[in-house]
Image 1: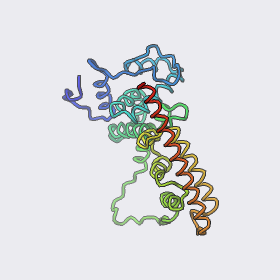
Image 2: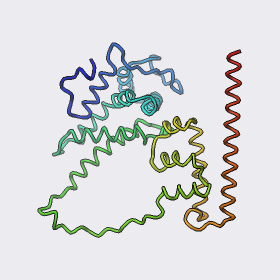
Image 3: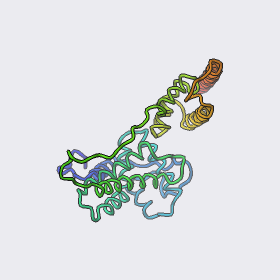
Image 4: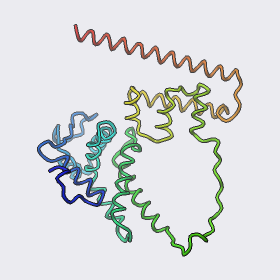
Length: 292
């Protein structure tokens, strides 16, 4: 079976995802899960398992919390770093829960059930791509909550809809305009200008802290480990919090303070360059030892 062989492609987003998962996991070259890469012994029955078999095992063992958490951390990591086939795999692994949520939300719903399906899937994919934090427990539960909330929000929005006879004569309520200053992006840009935030860290900081993007693909693109980037962002958080407390990002800054901040930035640059040089020398030494 292949996706291209399907003559009647499902109109429901969830049904389409299930069809894609079936095509991905069928013979002759099904996608399998290597359980040996997990961080600890999760108690899974085989070192390599077909994804449908792994899904069935997890469903039959609802109290295997360690196994479920370890499997889903690896699935999320692969979906973020290893290509779209692992995104399909993650959706297929969660399909029983996603279909159950969609069915519950469609009870008494007078709209198109396919819309609920699409929102449930969209909520799941958004969390899979960016929102689920792999350092916290129960990553699968966070994906499921995101899927449920997305479908529920669509249903609530439809309930809040009130038709009017003539939209042109509806008087809108007063709205308070938003003040443009103080926007987080502008504060980050000011932090860069003052030397509180290094220029090369600006975009990763915006992506992770303000855009709530997943840290794994950003660290990979940045060429550092996830732990290293996480620690770097934590130090930036502390510097920005201190600067906000001192009023440096919202008020005038004296020339003396500006010079001091730039001196600290130069010290960080030198330390980073020194660590990078040490790493390169160590890598070269290891390569030379391996070749000898």
